[in-house]
Amino acid sequence: MPALDAPAERMRKFKYRGKDASMLRQQRVVASLELRKAKKDEQTLKRRNIPLLSCDPALETPGKGLEASFTLEEIIAGLNGSDPDLCFLATQAARKMLSREKNPPLHVIVDAGIIPRLVEFLKPSLHPHLQLEAAWALTNVASGTSAQTRAVVEGGAVQPLVQLLSSPHKTVSEQATWALANIAGDGPEFRDLVISSNAIPHLLDLMTSDISISFLRNLTWTLSNLCRNKNPYPSKVAVMQMLPCLTQLLCHQDYEILSDTCWALSYLTDGHNERIQQVVNMGVLPRLVELMTCPQLSVLTPSLRTMGNVVSGTDDQTQMAIDAGLLKVLPQLLKHPSSFIQKEAMWALSNIAAGPQQHIQQLIACGILPALVRMLKNGEFRVQKEAVWTVANFATGASVDQLFQLVNSDVLGPLVNLLKAPDVKLISIILDVIACILQASEKTSQQEHLRFLMEELGGMDIIEALLVHDNHQVSHSALSIMEKHLGEEEEAIIFSTFCQD
Image (tube, rainbow, N blue to C red; front, side, top):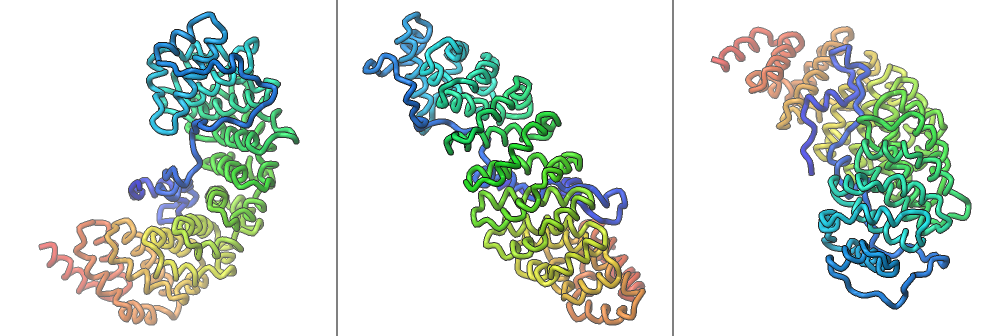
């Protein structure tokens, strides 16, 4: 698994209500590098076609009965020859070579320089079965490395593949769809090339009422790849072309279609508020909240991700997510057996807590505080870290009354315990929270009670020990708390100076 976010990177990504006012609305659009980059949990970028697609009776194999084993040299010779039957058999042999389940020789085909010849076989004037075999071979090459995908693109495949989307033979148009999905999945450059080749209208035209479920799955996955990547984002025109169809697909019952549709929406909401608003305007939030209760992780994960992205946006967008029922579902997800889901749910809650006091009150009303404290006490460490961010956002934006509702939920105990964690940034955040609570207590009659509580929890001893922490920010924050709030100014300064000497 990839390492956790570096502190500076996390601060850049998090919608955080910290001491710096410029960060109050800063978006944290990625919560978990482990979850986002674990390919087993995320949507597949590229796919090879190993089994034969559903048979199209209109396609009859030319040269039936002439199938034979071909060496690479014989494939090259057959492809470059003028005998149509031999061209077909050589193309088929190349496709079969590329369809091996393990270690297909993609680089061999690329290095042999036969990609342009395979592209020639996509022409509308040629036999559909030859088109199918050529498109299939190119699909599998494009499923490889970026260099191999580039070889397909530079071989001139994109425009002929877009033209094949209009083939009367569904098997051919489905294979062309698959190839374009692999090309678009490589990155924003090729995604935009597929879009500029006018693929989207042709893809949408294929979504008819009589389409097979396998073809619809491929089309949905292709659209999701066309929504992928944000450096740069897909054009607004392309997004607005796809969003009505994605909204319809969100009502489908097939888990694979729902999963890829939710991934598409997660990509489109991953960033600027304007992008989030385009999705919100489609009225999909209630359905996404509903899908967050799906038993299938493949659907739950991207629907939760999308809603987490929405609440990383403006206060109005966050309120629309709350109005759609988000806070009825998130507390339940903190009990999910998957710590990834717990962490993602806590990230969404932390961004709601970064909102105005109205949002904080809605968090309290949904009963989140006991669950939050439970996660601080017993969650896996990565979930505990998310919970600390939630508490930090809550504490820095809450009213005094709301803040003491947090304190009265016994949050200080687990926070003090986490001061022992080997995570400098986490310790700094917790010290800020404790300082915030102690400062607020000075405006109430709770000051002495909190001092006593901190001593009872061992917090004073732990903070005193942090006076000599290797990190200057940690030691400085600890000293500030001792000086300003715990009545140990002289002792803290003497102790700190003695230890430094």
